[in-house]
Length: 263
Image (cartoon, helix red, strand yellow):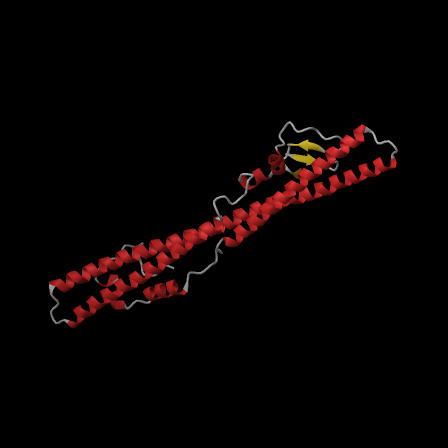
């Protein structure tokens, strides 16, 4: 619901009316201000429900928590990959140092390489999860910013409507002061305009609160360009610079989608 002024600048007051129990059957207002339901309200902005209260907590904080967990998992996976690489290097060095490597050493090397391959797959999956969450954070930031922009436009309409309604009240009060005997219609119109003004002010306060909450939520969203922490980058860099003796391609074939360099 909203009130439309004489200059046809609608302002959103649906949430205030809901709070005050005003519905479609609200009493019409005499004069240039009338209730108008022709324009979409905040509930139509960005396809989001009109109630933008953070009932489930901050969406930005929730994504940040999941991203932090994914980064920890990536760090652990990269460190585990490095340990498996060192183990494969150790077996390779043991074979090179043996005059006649026995079958047990060859079996150990094969197992070490298989473990390393699985470790690389796990690290690659962990890295993809981090990148997916960064993209999700970027999309969420865009969504919240669009919501904020839409609600800001409604808030500007509401501010304009508040000023217009206040002006109508001032003009009517001035006319009533000049008149020796203000008519009952004038008094009724004044009361209705004052009621309108209170509803508009309530709606504007609600929108201001919603805008503040959205700004706080946007601040909680991790930046899309955020880099992984130094420990993760160091572990991955070590994997990229692994000794040639430990490369799986030496004596075995690695599937084309599994490689040491993932970035």
